Length: 504
Ligand SMILES: [Zn+2]
Image (cartoon, rainbow, N blue to C red; front, side, top):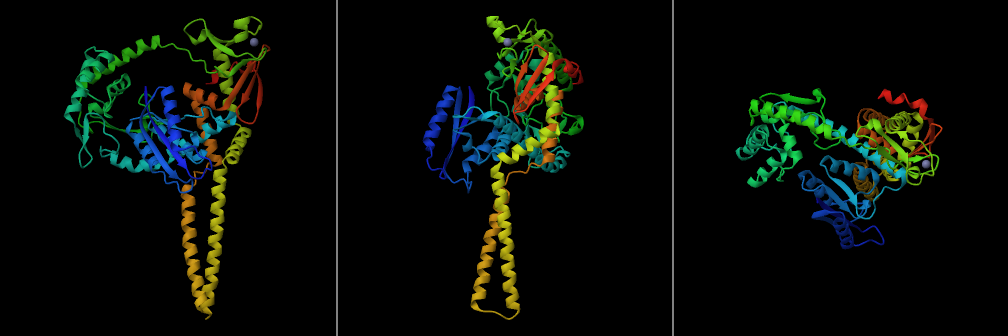
């Protein structure tokens, strides 16, 4: 069971609005059906879309950092934000804390354009936040260089002194020593977890230990006194210590903080982990069919399903389901490696093309009328401020020319008051406006997606999920790819692309 919270909002703007209690009832039902444990309900009872005084929403965002829940359930996604851009920004903020948003009433983004838009806006918001964070991080690096605490919860076994330096928290340091010692002397993860539970020992977030938390502790160099600090946040937002970070992005200062674990014990543990990794890898041969659900037989239209005649990808292929079940289709099987590499490589080239970029920019601008509305509002306000200034200037000129009556004074005061109001409205409109995604920013983001797809399986998955809608494979060796954007059909010959896979 996963821990979840409910966020409900009553909007006074909507004419016929589902009451907040009805929303919560639907969310509770959804939670029960989907195995979520509700630990808290946040409700903003009467909120107009304009003022956006969503106290409970802000509370929920800041609570998400405490790692008490993994999911936020909303009745409909429009409860969560006023527009797609804001929704993307908030989702990314939650994602950084390992929390995702699900809707009790809607399950799939609306249509292929919905999928691509959601992916792009979330990706861009991530890029935008990342950029912001990099700026604020510069200040923190200065603090980090003195081996001081830079914020957040300190690592298990340490406490933060008033001057922000670290010292050892004896009780929890003992937890760490026991975990290292047990592993070094041959205990399994399960045995360590059982022993920790027996003694009632907890992780830094106050939870029971799991395999992942033990694994992460055993790899953490801070326990031998090396102060480490990541200059940039990890890419998917989660504190993922499995991904190796580029060396120049990490500050490492040996003897920067007090050590909890001895060097000997540390070395034994690392060697053992290395050895176990190799043994585990041999069993871990689950094959993932990346095109599953998207690949179809061009001859009969049936879905093609992943098959394997061994535990290695080399012997895996996609087979027409009609052929498999009814034997009425004679489509030959397609090798998994070949077709996946072809589709991925073709898609990378396609999303990097000028044509695709143009249509993506169009889509974002076109769909995003909220942003256009606020842009129009800002332009309108600036115009009014200009007019107000001119009117004031004219009165002042009149005063200078000696024309001064009680009406001129009143007029000037009224204009001053109007000017104050307009300026505060402008400030509000500007701060509410979501980030501008320029064509350049979109290009940079697309290049990042392409690089990621060339390098990693998760990059491949993201690429296929976001951009590819269907792949048809024909017996003459051609492949038709349908994309989520622009009803574009690409017909390619598989034979031309056989070599393409080698490029990666
Ligand atoms: Zn078929």
